[in-house]
Figure 1: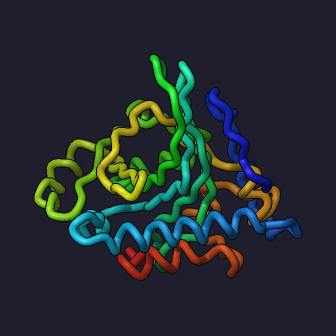
Figure 2: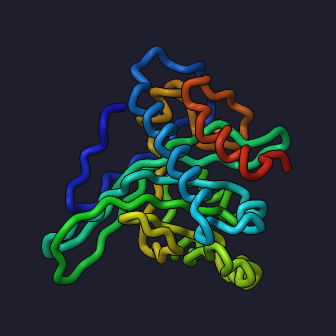
Length: 232
């Protein structure tokens, strides 16, 4: 699927595919391969940051891990954000194949400027993981979200896990920290899913149905496996 063009309005809603699963279609997947490579690189860089990485005990408790590289936040009076990413979930055999997602949201007020931000989201409960099967998720609405702890803030991990289904992080201009993302909407990227897995691919078949990812898009899953075992 070609590059997603982001306007100041909320990204268009994209629904899920049907429940059956087809073999990968013969389409140009260069863009999706680039997305998986970016996500893997960003995660390695974040985990390699001294005293600012995601605490390992938090990572080990996550049911699913999502990365959204270079989400654009633009504001000229009315603000908006939008971008693409991918998510993998733990299974009985290891991390799943990646499902492709869009993220969007809007804010209001006197603003001006634009910036690119990397986001990481940890889905900490079975309920939050199952929410990925919905056509869209509003953070802070259908699922609770909180800024995740970093580095030596790990002692706060237990309380945070009890109070939020998703822990979120952001990295902008080299700085990595917990991020409040209430109001953002996550949707299945149907076009990307079709390009990689075929016309009838769904989040359920990819994340929980044992689908096998094409070798070219496994970089992210393998990177996550290097930091925390995917096998339940």
